[in-house]
Image (cartoon, rainbow, N blue to C red; front, side, top):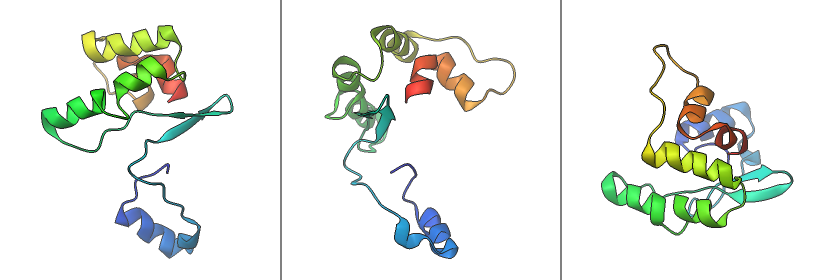
Length: 116
């Protein structure tokens, strides 16, 4: 499930004649990433908006807190770096536009970009 299951994506697959090859994951399950030959679940909220959605993303069944404390995708230094960037603070944005990689590395660290 590496892309959003939006109608526009399905329409393009249909136009290309590959719609029968699409395999959709259960949207209730977290996304997964393969690192060093092992599948690791990534944090996933239920799509709620506002403070309730943010709390669910952090503390929910597939939330960031469970991922950080029980998962083994990130090293402990990587977890600490990501936590500091996400919850305490991070470097100010550069004066020029930054790439997605630069943004993720500035906020959460290189390990998060490379493994997640």
